Length: 248
Image (cartoon, rainbow, N blue to C red):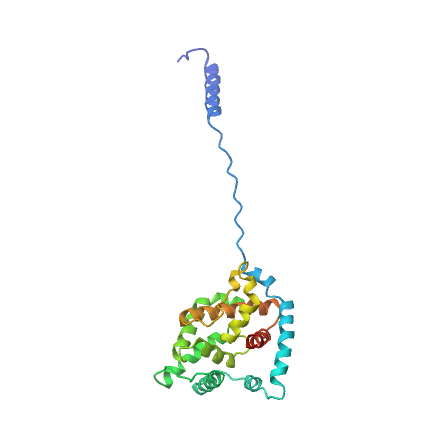
């Protein structure tokens, strides 16, 4: 069989040239520049604010206030914490709640149908007490909120009362929250809220208990960050200066 325009070899040369010409006419694909991911603002940036140096300054200020206020007085707080109470029984819980409310201007009401209902709160309290650091807290945030809500519903419908009851059992890792501590936090950190919004807490106790639970969780979380940042394993070192500054 013959090929028009010359030999078989010449035909394939011509065909190859045409294919190359068509390929060269195709618009070249422009390389898409890979967008660099926008760096997320890490919550660890608050470590630049929650420093050991700040803690030392606040502590020095608070020690002067404490000395003037407590001179010649026996520290019932230290005595109570030194007893090392543990949530092993309903009696332990009732005693802790009663002590917590001796620090408050309101009467204690317990919303539980019977002793069995109170007993069901003990495993919840122990789970919260097992949280020792920020990593454990962040891993269980959803559960922590549920546990706190359950306790608030039973203990006077009060986040403040729950925080003080838990603190009696676990003073090194679970903080107290009340109006004094929120006042102190606002006075110290309000100037940082614009750049570090995760530091922001309300200056007064929220009326809505569900919102207050979340505020308490944020406060607890921030203290765990700060505690880690200063290399401490005792949150009371942070709470004490906040308490005295808020009281002033």
